[in-house]
Length: 359
Ligand SMILES: Cc1cc2nc3c(=O)[nH]c(=O)nc-3n(C[C@H](O)[C@H](O)[C@H](O)COP(=O)(O)OP(=O)(O)OC[C@H]3O[C@@H](n4cnc5c(N)ncnc54)[C@H](O)[C@@H]3O)c2cc1C
Image (cartoon, rainbow, N blue to C red; front, side, top):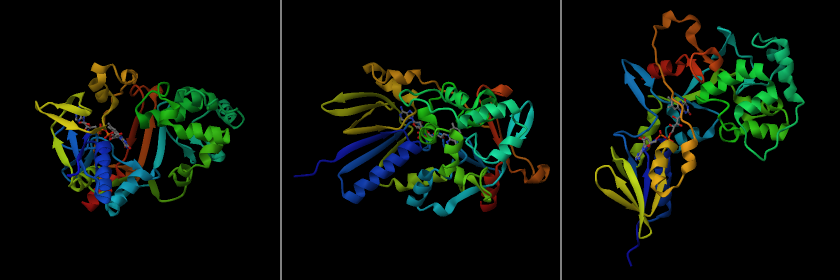
């Protein structure tokens, strides 16, 4: 009897959908599973938010420009795809924060906004003495109950007080995440904070013991920074994955507009007036794009309540000679400085410079 081929549809060709399709294809090939995968992407290109422009000799990122090197997942993926040798690390640079209209250096030993070295924290001009004393309260305050989630803002204000949050944690964390700390879930966005508090009671003590603290550019004296990208930019990852999806059907410029169930199978209605039948469907879409597909069935209503924030990237290029001290720096600013609603990050493109040199 002929073996029945199971059809799997992956909806969304951003990095999530691409990696899901890749690993599914790999498993099917290794184990000889009779699976056929169709990746469906609404845009005419794959990659979603990852989009690199190569223009006038510059590598310009329209979306993410890097990933954190201590998070193993991208490194593992690069190894899996055999592009490990195309990884580029950032150079170690100085971090500043804007406080009272001045660029202030972030104290050495700061890990995700949490001071873990007492000397640099005590001499920092970022905080008043009363602010420092209040922040040290973290060392003695009891841990919170794990029963209910709380906002990141509430959690860090309780541990460190208003001043440390406004001058350091909020600019760093809202800048990186592009969101309001009082609307970000601690469990979803910063589970490592909740874990550090539960294990060590004090966040300062807990963060000092994390892998991040040991590898962080602001903590160690290593020459490499904590960010990485690829030669040719982040889209190198997308292009490599696309090439490797040789056992899948990839549909570009095709949008899934509806889903229904028929005889135990999912039927995906497409915008080209056709449809696809699948035994399994994997959605790799942002929540705001997933929810409308299930609206007719009254499902996933909760996703509507998760707010979206907007984010803009601006790339500027200057002659190297016009930039002081090699220009290796990053700075961030929080909502208190009124540049924008949540936060802002500005960094010198040390990786773009390396990319140019290699390109
Ligand atoms: C400006 C910016 C900067 C960022 N910087 C960083 C950074 O420096 N480091 C970092 O780690 N992260 C960063 N991020 C976050 C990171 O880019 C995203 O988390 C990640 O790319 C999301 O990938 P995804 O595949 O889950 O979703 P997406 O990239 O959004 O992909 C979803 C795909 O689904 C497609 N789609 C939508 N609806 C349908 C449909 N109905 N049918 C078919 N296809 C559909 C879309 O066209 C899209 O291609 C940044 C994000 C932005 C916007």
